Length: 313
Image (cartoon, rainbow, N blue to C red; front, top):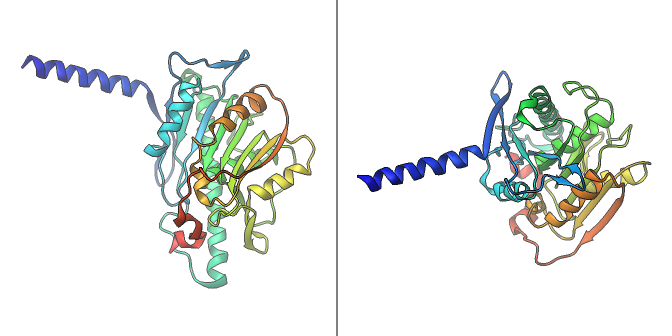
């Protein structure tokens, strides 16, 4: 009986320690669902400043083609732990899945309707991110300063993250605290969706870190679309910023890799760390355009053949 009691106490203690490492809050109530965020705090022994500057919180937006995914996805937790071990708070958020249940029609008409639905999905994702930021700003007791956030996303989450930076650079800040801007963006296989032609930045955006596979057929490396509707990928965004004064950005083009780059958080940690410390915290502006040719990087053969339309059949 005593062994059972000790074991039960140990399990309860272990659960309490795990629970204390993650806090969950409801940040918005929509017609269709409630939206939550999880906060993962830095390790107690971690250094939370760099050269006297507080490290930013990393707000993560999950991927899944706007049809699936979750802020609780286990396959991303290892990256969260690494960030925590390096002194960064992580905030993982929900957003509404605008393509969930959507079936793409055939032919030109089906493609046009799908692109319009993608625009809507991106838009509501941006709205939900802005709501999460406003919630953090309204609750200083959570100790996640809203004026010190880097947004990061994978695939659809990267699209939303870049769309947030694009909206702010163009003065579209409804739902945000006055004067808010992200400290930076880390995008893993992202782009910007538009139905009004190629995206332009009225003002220089916050520092951007772009990762993309040159063979990506799901989130286009360069561009795909019809007329003014389409998705403009990392390569286009970098070319746009290159021609604009005052832009602080890096693009890491991964040769011959497809959409698996959306999950390269661990593989590209050394780049992320340098970006956060130099571009974001030290505020040193630079432009990096690198081609990564590394056969040891993971590759998923199925992704090389998968196209965007394949996800919505």
